[in-house]
Amino acid sequence: MMRRFPLAVWLFALALAALTTLPYVVGGWSAPPGWQYSGAAAVPTGALVDFNSHIAKMWQGYRGQWDYHLLFTHEAHPGLPLVQSFYVALGALASLMPFSLPAVYHIARFALTVGMALAIWAFAARFFEKPSERWLATLFGTIASGWSWLLLALDPAMTAELSPIEFWLTDAFNLLGALVMPHFAAAVIVQIIIVLAFEAWVKSPSPPAPLPVGEGRKPNASTGFLSRTGVVQLIVLTLALAAQAIIQPYAALLFGPLLVILAAYHTFSARRLTRRRALWLLLPLGCYGALVVYQSIALYSHPVWAAFAEQNQTLSPPVTYYLLGYLPFILPLLPGLRAFLLDRPDDRWWLPILWVALVAMLLYAPFPTQRRYLLGVQTPLAALAAYGWSRAVLPRLRVKLRPLANILYLALASVALVGMLAVNIAALSEPFSHRAVFYSPDDLAAFAWMRRETTGRDDLVLTVTDAAGLGSGGRLVAALGQRVYLGHWIETADFAAKVADMRRFYDSAAPDDWRRQFLKNTGAVYVWHDEDARRFGDWNPASAAYLEAVFSSGSVTIYRAAEKAGSS
Image (cartoon, rainbow, N blue to C red; front, side, top):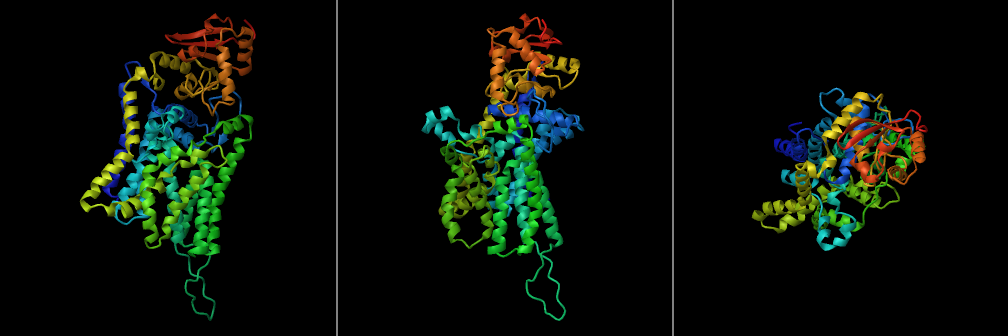
């Protein structure tokens, strides 16, 4: 492996992983005495919500629960094996290690960031022979990000409604995604394994056809059977697609068509595949499709899971954000088109071209997960941008100026990424200004009481979470793996209605009879009352005869509901 990846590439990959880990190290060091850093990024805000969700999944794997349940909602529902299994498996791995769940989360994120950088280098090596061009593609695929932040100056009114995508759309850029979530880096690695295994399978030789008695050998005759190399590549492709179905199931609408189109090209145009041999693709594609269809059916097999699927809306922003967001790739790509047309035909380039084209079509397709298809698109864009930059832009410059041009352009392309790292480092160095990602001594004391005194993790805790997904619900699930009433804008069934219910619960004008019935209907065992709850309303649970204060520390009080909530 060291021969395939030069030492400089290994050092670069390790440096990227260390750089993306620096904000979290600062967060851990900055926690005041008695406080604890949660392990979440401070920016974007949604990173904390996602972090809490992923740690919730890890809790279930840690406890040996492989059928995933939603801990952010109170309704009973069946667990789903293979759904969200990346983090469930990571939690199971954590049970074998002497580290906390957030620590294992970041160990995985570090390792997978290294793997992602190496995979992008391997992808670049498929298209470029020169090390300098491979480095260009790798840099475009990692440190480069977007320029939609220019809208802050060009159209402030537009960004007042929606921030530039470099500041929140972590799916859009490889390293930005790896900064906050290990499964994003894993998905990019698996994507690259899929396309490289497919191309290697296409190039693998077929066994020669048997010679009939009395006939001479026909040139290039072959059977539909596979050589040993072809079998290995097909197995790798099958396993990679299966992993993709678990890590990134919605990408089936991208990689299914991509592989079918490429197979059709190699069968009917390039004629590298016989029709009989092309049929072997039914094996990996069939496994891939079966896993994706199973998850799709499972998510609509119960009302709670259906609510989860329906709330999972990740629609695309206006196209202006994408055009400026990917402008650092588009600018060198455009002059590269002329060089591409004049260059010797090379059908290797159909892969990145088709990949990008399919993503562009899916971004505004009638699906609720539009922007999810961006995950990993920087990889083919990086190859195309590196081609345009090395074949069309650099040749126009004097040789002595080319290194400077590379440095300046890539530095400008990485401004947003550097900014995100700097903002997180600054934010996580000031715990009192960013308390959402830190646990206070009151929080920790309450968590310790819950661990010690609760009868089980299924005891429902009445928590609050606002429309942005921030509040005690997500924090409690991440810290304890405890089931809560309200905690996540996707994973809490009927999220908007429950936010309204909790605002009414803490409204002093609401009648006590309604609250008692509400507690009975939800089956809540505990009420978690903290600063987040106080922001929801001015009603104080201490005035309720049907709630017993069982723990109190500063800003946090835990109440136990009466055994019969209908009685005073």
